[in-house]
Image (cartoon, rainbow, N blue to C red; front, top):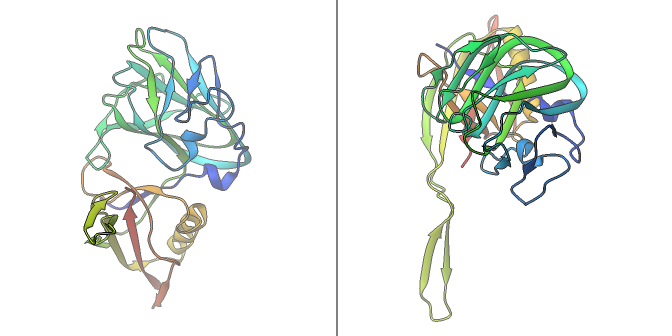
Length: 278
């Protein structure tokens, strides 16, 4: 097993935030109540902001259309915080044509995912939660995700985030250390009488330190590309730490200000820190 990175190429490629992604043959309600314009919730790097699609009882095929500013090579898509299994839906990826299905998985964030089958390059998710769809690589500025019912949509479809990009698997397994953050999102307020009230906004965050004692020149370039795609700490990404036989994804971002490579004879050393998104 090895560590695999799943960065979102959409922001790096650029898009019109007022119009993308758009929807064809279906209606939606964004988390803020909007029913027109770009469906910003799907690209806001926040998996908890849900979009609701009015599919309940329907049978129509519909799609999300994402027109990018520049063409980018992609080979995976992630649909996170979805209820596609409960809604009895299936989906596939399109870029000039329906793309060949390599592997597809479904399940809960932070747990080993279950393999999904596919017929005619269309996958039917076996669970709600996060869906990972690996497809035959393509380079395009026009991407679509098509959705269809298995029989009839059993409820409105909801989803929180979409990633499309090119995954990167490190050649060697790093040393991995889990760091528990001491920041619980805790604040303390004091009343005029001196009484203190403590509260927290979130739980204990997890950090991982990944230490590679050997990476090649070619792999150094891949890490630099990854850093460029995420703009360092700006955009989160998904990562599989190689814990299970199937992907086990976490939603994280870099937690250090720069990549620092240490040159060793014929290779490089690299240490990175990532932090789980709460």
